[in-house]
Amino acid sequence: MSALKKLSLSILILLISVPAAAEEKTDFDGIRKAVVQIKVYSQAINPYSPWTTDGVRAGSGTGFLIGNKRILTNAHVVSNAKFIQVQRYDQTEWYRVKILFIAHDCDLAILEAEDGTFYKDSRDLELGGIPELNSPLIVVGYPIGGNKVSVTRGIVSRKEQSEYSHSSVDSHLVLQVDAAINPGNSGGPAIQGDKAVGVAFQVATKGENIGYLIPTNVIRHFLTDIEDGSYDGYVELGISFLNSFNASLRKAKGIPDGLEGVFVTRILPHGSADGYLKEGDYLTEIDGSPIGRNGTTTLDKDARVDFTENVDNKHAGDKIRFKVFREGKFTDISFEAKRMPDFDFMRNRYDAPYDYAMIGGLLFQEMSQDLLATWSRAGNTSGGSQFLYRYKYFIPDGINRSKKADVVLYRKLAHPVNSSSDYFLNLVVESVNGSPVNSLADLKSALAKTKDRYLRLKFLDVELPLILDRSEAEAADKQIRSTYGLE
Image (cartoon, rainbow, N blue to C red; front, side):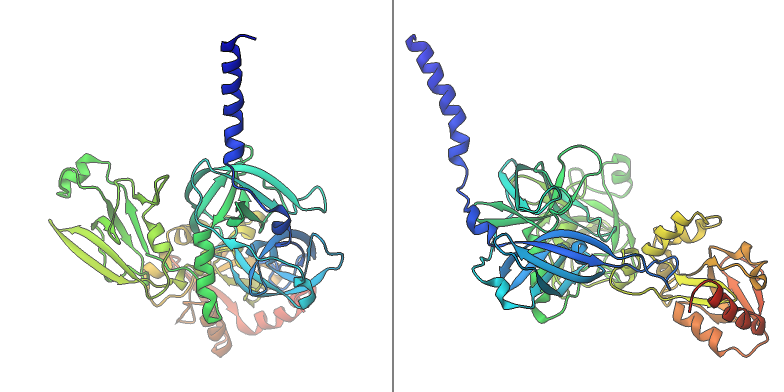
């Protein structure tokens, strides 16, 4: 072999060997002692028929020990659970656990085994930082396809804010990885070295090998929140904003050339910004970090994310600070971060029954994400554009700050007493016999208190009311409950 060929071969071997040598050594045996297999038996209530439940479902997931006997996993793994068991790789017995805390807005939960024997010879995983792009990691868990612990490798390919599908509305930071994540992996740790740098929780429905991790900043936010013994949830800035790429818009608003930022287009009532920011404000900095024309700030050397990520990392009472260009001059504005319970109806709901009212076989509920999903699958969607618009653009509170929710006539259980009511299906209730309906509780109260012979149900934007003979409707309800199994 010539000297040149020997040199080329040596370089090739060196190039192949360096990445493997550069990887951090991982203690697989120690990690296995921390990772937990979870079996769950769950049962959900049907939002469309809230007096019924779905069948019991068996599912599985993964969790891992993080100290003080706490098992961290995904909220979606244990939602609607009736019975939960856990086991580690070297155990033959299954141990019952209880849910200590659950956070549906960030898809995380804390479990604890009822029998201390479960923790014998276990190990806790320490949380690491947010990993760099293109850095290797492993995902450990118990996915479908076997009963033994599984390890898959991948790299971090993206950092961004994205919707967490468990709640359907909340967006937080996610890490995109190309490691295989399959059903059963949910709740398992992603490891770099010997530290957990994320929790596996969802995959892309399109594409191949696109999985997502909940990063440690979200995990730490959750753990800090529960330190007082309860979970309060994320704060909300409560604004809509528009990028500032349009040069004509910038000129019309008098924005100086080269000044980066975004326009505030809407202030939501009861949000953190309500009473402080104004529509038309030009936001240039948040907490000292410049905001780009596309609405992003620098996360780290690898990525830029929506500036709302700064708010996402705060807790109620923390200060939010903006530099704002308003009416031709700069001003500094600060205010306290706070939750927006008004947003709760837009989240998927778990572990709780659905309240409803019925009169004359007509069913009423407060509009929610769960009802919307099952209502659309049921196919009786004619005339629903009004409340869909109000739901999408969060109109109820914007129109009337005293209104808690839109109460919708979403379904009827057919009976002669309600045979002429189809026109009013999928409309928003405005009042009953003149009493305003701003919540389901208002509707129930109005129906219970009225002594009038006739019930006059007035619907939003409809001049003529639905008229029911109260005595006939109440009498029919007894038969309807028996016929349709509401008893």
